[in-house]
Picture 1 (spheres, rainbow, N blue to C red):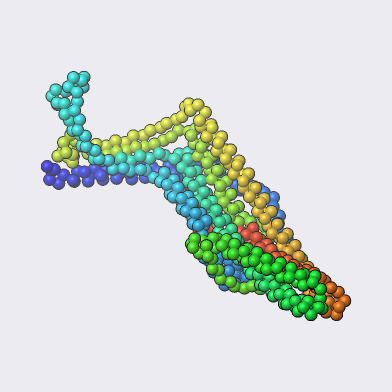
Picture 2 (tube, rainbow, N blue to C red):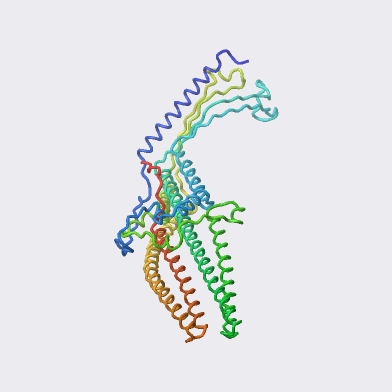
Length: 493
């Protein structure tokens, strides 16, 4: 039976335990103020970069976070929103970011003491023939124990401070990595949509051309029956119809593949990927005419590009790891405290005389580790050099991406202008060839060649417009458009 009001002494014991815990917390605060962090604080590497890029177009106000709205196509806007909601690549990146945040939370627990509640009940029998046997007590004994224990390692050399710095940097790196996935997703969906609209235009063009060729075949059939033209003209007309039928079927196949690829990017269900149904908005010509190109491109916008941010945060984390590794050379200070009740009999467990407590300070100075600490520091330095090289390479790649996108856009504008002029010229050529044929000055082969050249030029113009739109999207992707760094926990002081 427990004694009356027995829990009161234990409550007093818990109170003493809390006092010990509060003492440790105070020690934590004092030690945190006096931390001498090892290693060098991070400084951004100096990389010589130009102040700005060549102006790619006329003055245009661009919303970098939603650049796709410049095309003024609600269907494109809806597809991008659907992709951002259902993309599994984005879900994977978000999960990795959540994992990094959990690691940060776990590391932050090192700044506080650990407190545990301990309870045990032991019954033992001592050997009656052993040297420790006491006949006055007997072979059987009991031990009941209930108490609190607390421990804390003083972060005198900033080991946990550096670990916290590294974990925070890795969290931001994962956040930026998610941004990289996001802007790639936006770019891929937009380019996939433009490719689909280009195939729609190619399909419409092939249908129109096929209708023209079929009308020519009907005309040549009547002329052949009337003896006006020879058999060669009839077979040439038939060949053109069969060729256009094959082209139409191939375009239909390519369009179906483009639809399934876009449905996959949108994160749709397998059944919807198997039989994709995708809305259409503005046609390719309207999208091309409405392309929005920014006027000014300061080079410092690349510092906000998510892969550059991620690479720099990885470098920050690697730099902090060096200080954390160097702490292994220095003494480790730790405090341990315990308070509780201990008794042989359960009935006396909460008796005031059953109270026990302890407070232990411990200092450990590494003397010989067979070079283990040196190896850990050397590895940390090597990883920091790797991160520096990767950061530098990422910045270099970012400038190349912008250069290539600007180059492709400039070339695309010239190519598109030339392609449009070629279509106009071939329209005139076809009109004249048809007049010459009807007037008997040339064979039907001249008309077919003119028709064929015009169809190829029109298809080429569609492809040039799609390429130019893709280059515009590539420029926004290269500049990090569509991503904004999310809020991030401030650095622990």
